[in-house]
Length: 194
Image 1 (cartoon, rainbow, N blue to C red):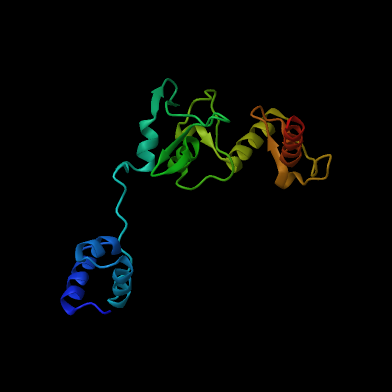
Image 2 (cartoon, helix red, strand yellow):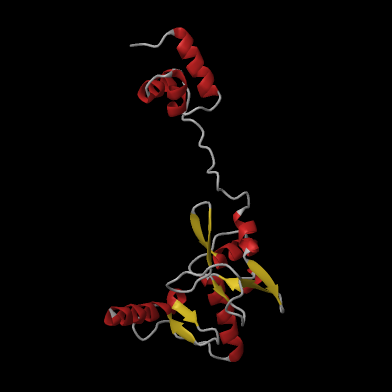
């Protein structure tokens, strides 16, 4: 049964004010499905989502900074929580979990990281934006160190045939290794342990 014109006009006013189908149905004592049909007929899109009352007014970067403390040597020490399984510094913002180092990397570079982000200074609890690197940056810096200290190699493949141009990684001390072989061995050890 169609609604009378006065009810349709009041429904349009409620939709203009941002009412949901449920709120409009309660206010006008009609069912929610009817309110939804009239929303579409009158050309109104979905009601705007209201922010959850417990949402933080802080940005991701501001919330990240709220969990840090400055330390000697331009370090920022993480005071927030750590992931239970692997100890990575993490925090939640607007129902999404972030790793502290990935946010620090975005602050430093303005872009999302590629691969894992690690601390490249001597303090493992440091999350200072200037002290973190993603995988390509880490590989580049460590390759430069390997060249300086003389551990760089001219090999084009590892012993299992992986091209060093795409698979070579370096330890923090500059020693080269094959990232793919390393990952394979890590998976094999995990499978044996399980």
